[in-house]
Amino acid sequence: MKFSALAFLAALAPLPAAALNVSSNSLASRLTGQHAVYNLALSKLRTHDITGATGQMSFNVTDGCTGWATTQHMTLIVRNVDGSLTKSVSDYVTWESKDGKTLSFSLSESDNDGKVKIDSAGIATHTGPDNSGVIKYTTPANTVLKMPAGTLFPMQHTEALLAAGRAGVKFISPLLFDGTTTDGAQATFVTVLGHHAPGKTRWPALDGDASTDVDIAFFERKNDDETPDFRTSMQYYENGVANALVLDFGDFVMTGKLNALSVPPSICPASRAP
Image (cartoon, rainbow, N blue to C red):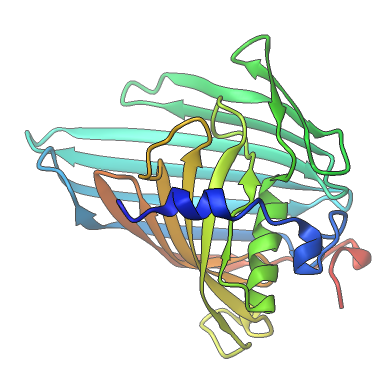
């Protein structure tokens, strides 16, 4: 990863929604609620300290008409070189308003002992027309950070990369704030690997949607390191369901196979574009 990704990030200003022909108030208009479960399997090791890993992740999105409620629950079990097992459980909860103004967030983790630690929590608000704003953390307590112009929330970020796929754009670099870090907005570099017309799939709920293959690298804005903090790739369908996950944790890489999926009918008729 010494490929100069940060050079691209410096050269490409955060892509505004207008450049993708998507208004800031309708970025999530094609997305739907979902319940998806992924089985995680080890695919690559880059260290001798780990000999195996397995896990499961569930992702739930509820269309609340005025906003999106999301919950993500992930369990990872790592086998160490001495044969011991390390278990980590994380829970990530957000509420993102559809007008693009507010994101409430909470990330908690527990270790082998089952002790729960809140890593981050708070509310982020877009206060300017350029998607600048402020983040008020309750964990860490009394922490307030500014969001730079162009910062997207998670559902906005998803729609921006889907819009890039539809438009034939190969690279975008939107800033993202999703509440998973206490350092504020992150830089992301999204490579669009391909765009697919609707086709037959294992999951009937996906048969009517086109999809986009993406690779996403996440960087700390204050860090000059060209190696991303985290990297993931997936096939994203227009309704927001992801398939063929690859999660790169640095020391090891896991693949996520979609094992269960349900997409409930929307109770908000205007929430999805025709």
